[in-house]
Length: 24
Image 1: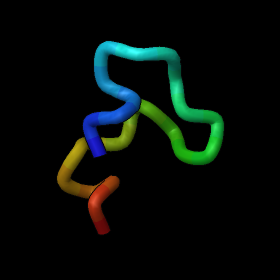
Image 2: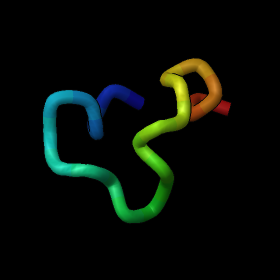
Image 3: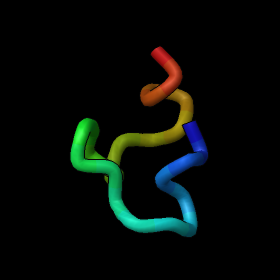
Image 4: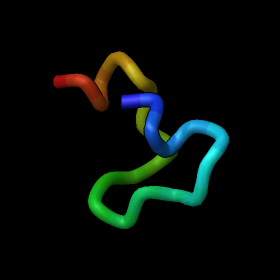
């Protein structure tokens, strides 16, 4: 989930979404 954190934005999913929500 933290793959987009500190790296280039993930095009597949919005980076603004909290890590907890991204897991789900």
